[in-house]
Image 1 (cartoon, rainbow, N blue to C red):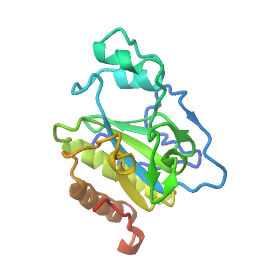
Image 2 (image 1 turned 90 degrees about the vertical axis):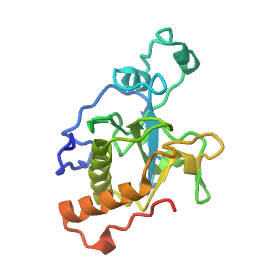
Image 3 (image 1 turned 90 degrees about the horizontal axis):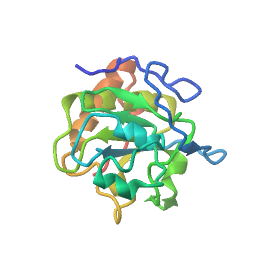
Image 4 (image 1 turned 180 degrees about the vertical axis):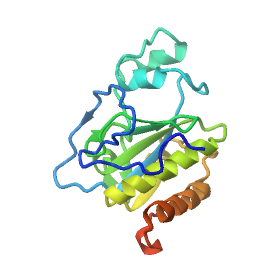
Length: 205
């Protein structure tokens, strides 16, 4: 079972009213007249390889105690965010309105376009490059992606590794892109009854 409702919808203000909204000041306005056309999948765990707790929320809210763990020392002054976080149990948190620009992609390029934050939505999966993601995460990710593509003209989904290959490796080799694609298509057809021609979302090859 997933931890979010399959009827999840994105409001006109870019928020999902049914999702928790932890504090996050790390966002700004997208450039004017810039459609949201890309979905970027990441993974995150703090400390690396450890799950649970509130460290991710603290990082995104600029309240991380950088003395609490040796790894956190390198995160001093770092200001980052994502629009959504999918926990290991499938729970989804929203940090930034999808209408706004979250700071998740950094220096990046997609099909000749720089600054992917300008035109993308970022989803963090609680996980790492070294172990499988959970069934509930794929389920929640499919629901969330289906809802986002119903609201915005998103045409492509990629990993952070695809738009910043010299810097990033996530979501990594244990993320099953084919499974994600299957579950997205099943969710979209089942939830919205959209014809297959309306479910076109390009996935990495």
